[in-house]
Amino acid sequence: MSANVEIVRELYRAFKEKDYDAFALICDESISWNQNPGFPNGHRYVGAQAVIDNVFKSFDDNWHEWVFKIDELHDAGDVIIVTGQYEGRHVKTGKAFVSEAAHHYRIHSGRVVAFQQYCDTKVIWDAMTR
Image (cartoon, rainbow, N blue to C red):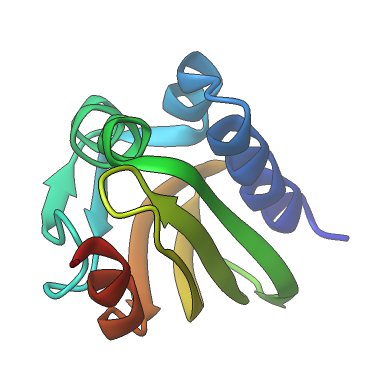
């Protein structure tokens, strides 16, 4: 397995364990983190702290459970593509969902410099509405 795949695996570990210090070390200080516009809090965030505050911590506030289960990691050198599923259960509605997703990472000098998300957002919004 390449060093870049290991970097991305460590990023998922840091997210799962809420190890935000490790996440910040994995990412370039000016990382561009792009989530689908239709995704909850979907937006472009710049910098690891912006991602932690506006993406990861919002999951903690709004979801009893929120995980990304990896199916495959595809190594294309400085680009790593990850396919899998988001799974969660919303705090207010109690509804659960599963959403197929793909993540596109760009790695430079051993750090994640860009992230682009692709996923089915409708099932997520369905879980958020009564």
